[in-house]
Length: 116
Image (cartoon, rainbow, N blue to C red):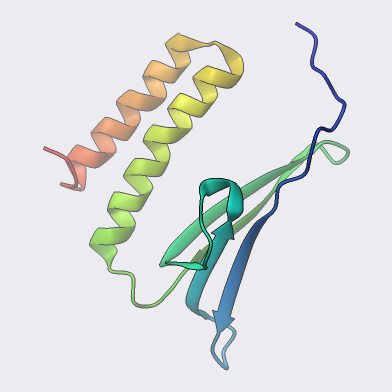
């Protein structure tokens, strides 16, 4: 499979972080015009992972505001784990391992009582 590397256009995703005096996040907003957003949308948490090909490592930014409850964080993590299984399967075609990741996400969700 050949990938066309010619850039047809650029898209921008913006994340704005408001910090208190202790440099802890107290507000998060994001904007992505390709998602149909015309104004900043508030958020309570975000996980960002970027693969550095040259360094062969992942740079991560994990942020959440103090107003996010433990219950919300547990549900956020459940949904993140479940969506990672889908991403993994689409990117590798390894459906067996994707099923394992989904099974773990399901066990996590049940254990944390965020799913029935």
